[in-house]
Image 1: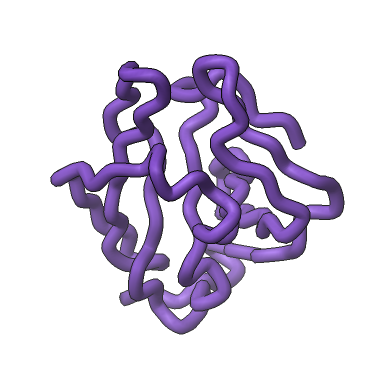
Image 2 (image 1 turned 45 degrees about the vertical axis):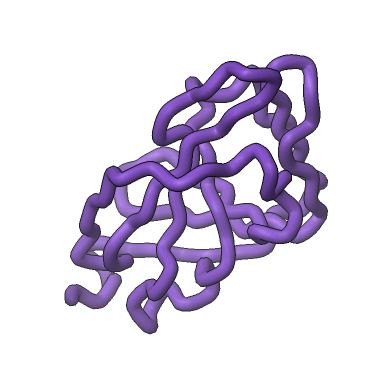
Length: 118
């Protein structure tokens, strides 16, 4: 486990505007409670509370990855209208203490959904 710091900063802030995610002509997530995670040289990532994502659209995917700053990531397929986008979403079920605020949140890859309106 590594701690964020000057060499690898991570900030988590409330996202100021509503977020809506669309796939297959349907809204699969909508929230006013998104968190924006900014990490070192990466693009910002929006994390949405899991209860604001359509639970029927999310299905488990066996993929896992590990971040030394955040912990183990679990992936989910997104299925709408019979079409499935594999590993379209991920979450940190037990994130490291420095990023504990993203527990219970899901992030989605912008290129695996039709739109993320934020």
